[in-house]
Length: 362
Image (cartoon, rainbow, N blue to C red; front, side):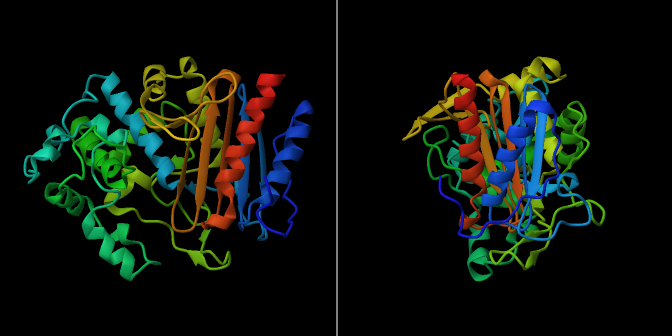
């Protein structure tokens, strides 16, 4: 894998290290230097033993990079679907319930195909709904640097669903849909009898001990600041409006590692059933890597067993999480810049796959 650019920047050696982890720390520092972003954090957990390295092109912020909360964008979907699996495990709902059964009675879809969409269809991106509501597209085209989600609240989201004709019958095709996952927010709220943030907190975050994870901005200095493509212009904190379930989670790197560790060892958590449920394959999409989709994670074949992962981005930040149950390995990566040349996601994925290969060979 080639470096992200011709510049080289020394990684900032803020690390958790113990004995034989020195080689891994050096390796993470080299990989962090390849990511072209003001702030970068890479973290690895192996059988519960963590190694974290920070770096970046900018001067370190006042709060250590590994202590900041980062915007996860679409990686938030893995938390939302875990909440779905948790409520299903409690008998509050069933994954194959129609979406309309868990929305206010006033929400009456105009198209018959929309009535057949289930909660499972939303989670697995097989609902037939487009990536975003049609009403969101014109604003995004006219104001590409503004956040259209902030002006698109839950009521507008539900009205858009009622008016949208799905592109395909539910269950027929896979179409990545922020729209679909966003609708899980009000559906889970209706079924669970509380707000989506409150349900996520009480049913998922608190049981897993994720005290550094939230759906909203924190006090000054608690959150990482994203940047535009130039790497200098700061981007305001992402307000996801009615799309909170699809992209509003913020988390510290250590909480991300804790989230991965829960998936690697479900039996050691209060959510063992839901954590296993979200890892079960749901559909096979084929492709060069043999793409499979579980209830929430992307899955690729890897030495010793499948590798599961998800990435996400907001207007100025990126995040990646992946794990390999067979080797007990998980990796997380965050950066405060969003553009293709940043190379956070491919760097993180390739590093995780290499660690998995080495574990299988050793």
